[in-house]
Length: 131
Image (cartoon, rainbow, N blue to C red; front, side, top):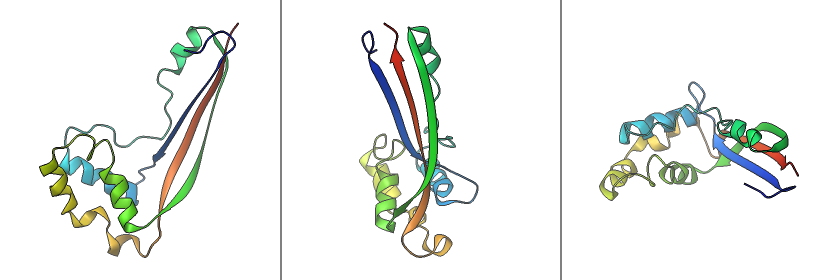
């Protein structure tokens, strides 16, 4: 928690899984290889915990978000999925190897030529600590 008169910025950047888009396909693939992963279907906004920050003396808490399409090569997108909390950060090396052999990680037929455009959301919360 910042000191009196301090400022806090919380920023979050994540893909947005929508029906039929490449992020939804990625999340289904993560769930296939890691059924314990429960972070899918997120909205890209992280309001949990902000109410507690208000209760501890903050003021002028503001949030905003915006969406953008981020270009990826097939290899880059596969790497993004592999580095996610659902694969690289939580699976054994054997399970990661099984993911790496999965052709659906970058489905060429379904999503066309590079660059793959993947919708992401930027969310931020900005506040000031009361004096």
